[in-house]
Figure 1: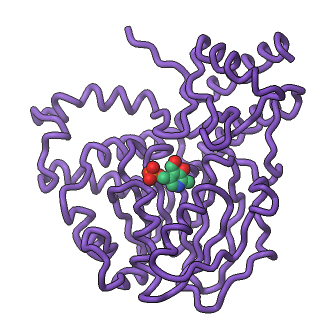
Figure 2 (figure 1 turned 60 degrees about the vertical axis):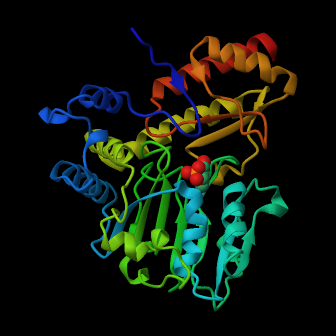
Length: 361
Ligand SMILES: Cc1ncc(COP(=O)(O)O)c(C=O)c1O
């Protein structure tokens, strides 16, 4: 018998066990058709049905308005760092970006290759421990759009509010917090999310884009990167990552069975409260993020003495608590507690943290 341990990986992250079981059961013979989803033509009625159902379930989960296209693309979220300016910035244009940490800086760096980037606000002066308030943002008049990352997966900062940017299209990297709570999609011009946290397997990226933003691509934009081409071809201009799309569809179905994003929000809130409470009550662990900006999805924490990191991680692994090591750029620990990470995983982690503190605190 195989065993499933508690996986706190930031991504590719834990998937719901029920989804993996369905995929396993259907792997050799999808619904009596005698073949795997991986072996089907993407043009077949069967796969088109899988793809359309996945899109519909995502639309239901996020109440996506009908004037938005949902695209299932390749290249992960990082490719969007280029694809967004190539489609939305205009030739020689400019855009406003908010800098809240490593992922938003990567987006800034890439967009700078295609036009002028105005960093309208930055968390740098506060060591990226807080999100700059909207009153500090210096938006520019000629920006084609405003970009931010709603959750900094490495730093552990998350916007608990949606920025107000007037009539500019608001563009958000929601890779690590999409579907973790309800969302008013109509406030955005474009939402993108790499799949490997709350959606499905890596490599796939979901883009939700308002229709009026299509058809604006740079004349040199590669065909494969033009949102309009993707939209007109149902995200099948070329062969899409069919298995990742199918698996994401199973995750959407699972989310609906769990009660949708409202239920996820209640569960995620309970999980994050428990974990931050344990950190804040301890003498050994600490999290530096401004309390209002703490991420519900990625909880970084440090031990008072770095020399305890190794024994902490070794003990965690012995207890079946996997992937707690922080990102190599910041060190310390990080517990990623996405939708598919059950509350029992957080309970087990909190219990282990208390036990470790008793021994080493
Ligand atoms: C917020 C955020 N944006 C972008 C990325 C890059 O995603 P990908 O590896 O799919 O390109 C990540 C990856 O972890 C992320 O967390």
